[in-house]
Image (cartoon, rainbow, N blue to C red; front, top):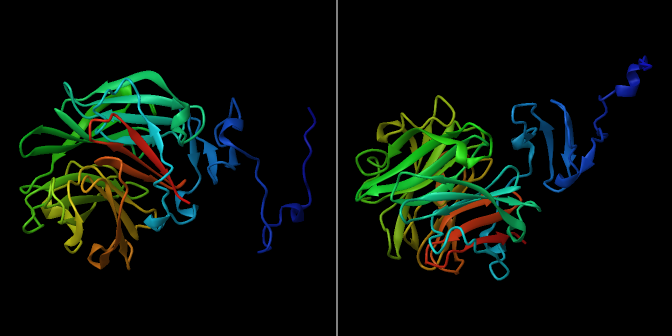
Length: 351
């Protein structure tokens, strides 16, 4: 095979500021079937540059998550009248265990809250982020807690849950997956109780701690939400930030290690569990409360990561039962599950 050497450097002159290099472009379905490590392309469907990592198993990954346009939103723009409803038979009526899109929106995790314990079921999506195309992958994971309130995978191999073991004993647990994006391969690694004696001791007058957590883009900062109201309206929330020396390692997190604490924010809502998402630039936090009837709060920071500058911008009732397990995706979409016995999961589009 002939090899041609390009001897004119000007053909690859990137010094001009008004030009760009055109990458191979296509949607998720048109990805190469047998990619090699380091190959990269622009995903026209997900709107970001991605590369094949060459791992075992391999995965398509974003080139630079910080280069993606800001995911700051106005919650009034979510379409709550045309939500997608997903009611999987495997879960039954206990859909309050949270949910999560994984693997660039090609898979979906549905948390079953109870009976006889928390269970996570995994589904394949033939169209990314579209639950109407979901089919059960015959993959599931039984958990140890009596109740499951959060199903959260910030990476392809880390799973975080909020599990209830006994009165006053809620725990954030981390599981590591030996096979990327296969929840059945998850093994427990570490956990942390969330109550007034551990993570929330710096929060005065707050007797109820929540399992609402979210990481920044590289896992070095953990955000945790607390509420003083579990089932009533008119409650307040406080958010704390913990800086981690090792990404996604929550083993050393406790009240003494909190690096920033927000003011008490009156949301006129209650029942916060496992429902917080932090924007990529860490200047906005969205929080979902169970009552009344699924209330989403928009919290904006004037200074990124500095929770002392946080203020409650607005709240909005989404309806559709007591919502739990909320996650926001930069597509942008909201995925959440109902803790009202309906066995349903919902996706709301941003319009």
